[in-house]
Amino acid sequence: MAAVVRQQREADEQKVLAASRHFAELTQEYEISSEFRIVWRDSALDDGVLRALHCDLIVAAHPKPMDLPSSWSAERLLLVTGIPVLLIPDGWTGATIGDAPLIAWNRSREARRAVNDALPFINMAAKVTILTIDSDRNPGHYGDDPGTNLAEHLTRHGATVEVAKLSSDGSAIADVILNQAAAQNADLLIIGAYSHPRTTEILFGGITRSLLSAAHLPLLLSR
Image (cartoon, rainbow, N blue to C red; front, side, top):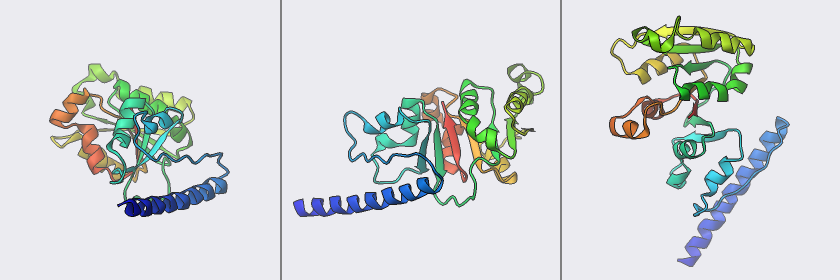
């Protein structure tokens, strides 16, 4: 048994060594100052959370690799740390991330936080689209001309912005968002995660959970 454990450990070390070399090559190519840290265990101190607290952005594969502990899920890191999470779906082969972002705008605190966290992407984008869905059903919530005020705010940051207003017509909101993302060739979806109470999302499902299960493009989530 000890020999098996030792062999597995050695194999893991070789994988980590290869990953560190690849990471170093990428960061050197783009002249990025970087540091490669290794966390070997899901400890009581929760090393994953501690590492995340000292960064600007968490970048994670989606879905989570099977051999990582559940406490390291991007969902949990987002909820516990408040650090924005950039999820890269398995199989994503796009050449860019953030050149044509789509903002799913519902005027919630979470959505506004997501926009603020995404400003580095927004400021470099060729075109930004703000998407509102069924906003005409609640004009008091969105204000006059839904999405326009946010567009003006982002324009002041130097972004090129357009507003798309859609009706769900009985379709699931998540499906409308993803269909619009595909139609405009968006390479990043910016969303405020869990605008509804977390327990409600778990019991009844929700837009965030639906997007996480079906998204085919990178997602930037904030809360």
